[in-house]
Image (cartoon, rainbow, N blue to C red; front, side, top):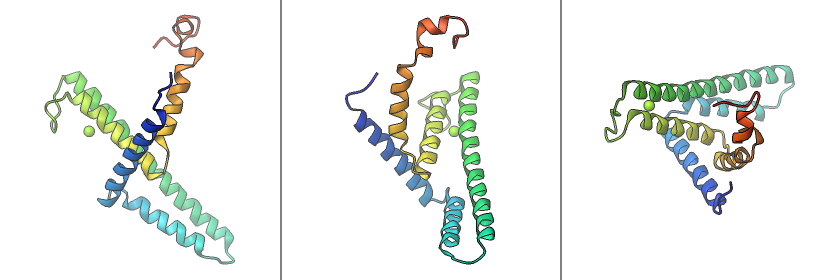
Length: 154
Ligand SMILES: [Mg+2]
């Protein structure tokens, strides 16, 4: 399934992702990442004879960046867990009581995913639309295939 306005949808999602990241960065949620990026730039600019040391420090910075990503992924999980809790207890959301907590936590998960994509300049809108198009054409996702031997039951 493809949309006539795929480009527009992709770019709107990309824009949303960039704005969420920009705001969160301005209010300090990404300070650790910005600091590591700045340290990495300093090291890359610094030309010396100690290439081994330089590469060790860069490895360490990249590991720290991956730990930040890991933390953000854990927070995305936490929103999904909150959605489950909301569903389990049939709760309304605390902040937006006009909606079910389940629905608001799904929105929180999306916001966190878009924020993470924005922080790493991932064109998430394009990827999402391409992946959705791919998924709609997958043979293993057809009703016939899924009802066969070893098919995906859910
Ligand atoms: Mg939440």
